[in-house]
Image (cartoon, rainbow, N blue to C red; front, side):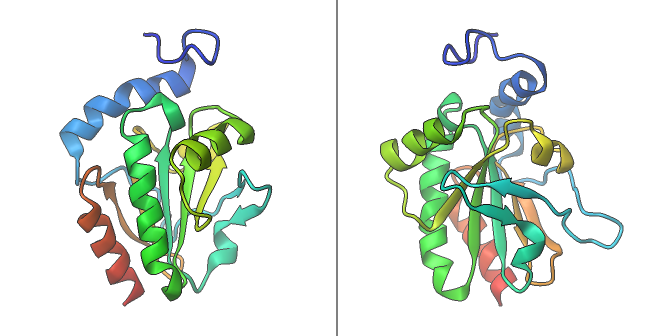
Length: 181
């Protein structure tokens, strides 16, 4: 299946399977649960990524804050643009409460291409953090099988909500509000 000409034709391997499965899984599970990645203690597995602005984001360093992260695939998926804009609105809405919102991008694009897509094309604010997951380490650690998989991590580092909320911004904002309360 040809998913992207930008990457020289066919996107294969794990990335190709992730992207190809996304549309079907989103249609089936919109608003439903996704595979859990929480350890035995219920804590969210730590990860570290470099944002498109060159800053390191480490989940463990965010203790004391609510963190939302969503797995998207830039220009390679139809839902990613609208979902990024919705995440940006949530980042702005909950910024005063110390909520951090991160897009973990699985497209394989580098920082420059992602900056162009998210900041240029979508005009997202600087509150939405964006980081490539080129080697899919974070995606695999969280057992992500579809774009749109979202996690809300509480101040204590536990996974408070996980799901596919595509098109249901109120579902995500409700999950964030409960984690902030």
